[in-house]
Image (cartoon, rainbow, N blue to C red; front, side):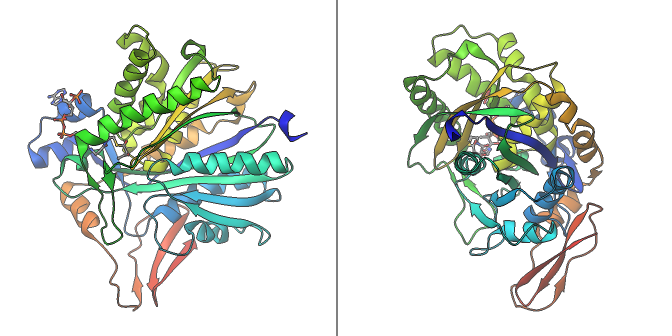
Length: 391
Ligand code: CAA
């Protein structure tokens, strides 16, 4: 029984922040030639959360349209993946569960392993649906990436959430059970509990990523996975969009193929359009890439898509999915473009103010200024408790 069930992504919805900072603005502040950002790392703008936005409000904004379209009756599990959690104990998904009015007869959990944990959430969801194909799992990846001001990582910041409904007989993408895995204990990027910004060894992180691509692919093919030329497109984790180019070039070389920029652009080009405007959204980034691919490519029906998920520290996984007939009628391309296009551009001083902003830790009443025009907002902190509201 469960072995024959087709399982995968039934719906996918993207949300981001109220504000955007362009790389022109950042370059004008720090004196960098903007070509380094536009061409060197492949980024044009970064999403910046308003003072009343965080991973919970973005997650709820992404998931609300999914629940509105399909109802919540079959959702028995909510898994929220993030590396920028708002609490050391309580799962952020519980706030989302409450904002969306989901049934109390559900389990909610948070997963963490740098940018990889959205994929762990997807694998967890597939296992649950295999066990009972009548159930659906709401998987949400939501992150705000933040580096120190004036550090090399600053230009790769960003924020977004992706919500995916995982279930049997999916309308968008059928996921395959076979995976290739790779884990290595490495300090390429990390964030100790006492820090609000990540620590990173930039060059080390790029080579750790490429090493993980090799490791995950080797394990995948060693277990009888598809051949490289069977894939019509590849979604990579995108800390910055040029990294996807580097990763695919590396994979082609490693697997003994000729490396041509045209071929790389053909198979990953459509996956980078949204990330270029949003910046790194850590756990969500590869799934933002999937949204971008589905929204921009010509008909992908029946094509295999390869996924390379990387999380510093490090864990990587390669897996595959096949695009389902009729998927185009179920896309949310208009809403995605609107979410990206409606962001309000801010200047450098305002960005800096938001970057440095934090709530006092004294347990008092601290309302957040009303800034976001999105459907959910962080009302403030009171008695050390976060308070959220639906507009
Ligand atoms: N025109 C065109 N290209 C230019 C240019 C110009 N005027 N000036 C520079 N460039 C190119 C450089 O040649 C370089 O390209 P290559 O990598 O292909 O050689 C690119 O722009 C970047 O230049 P630098 O290496 O000099 O840039 P940098 O020292 O400022 O740092 C970075 C770049 C290491 C990526 C830094 O932004 C960083 O630390 N980012 C955060 C860490 C990160 O994203 N790591 C990725 C792997 S880890 C991961 O994936 C997990 C995660 O999400 C963090």
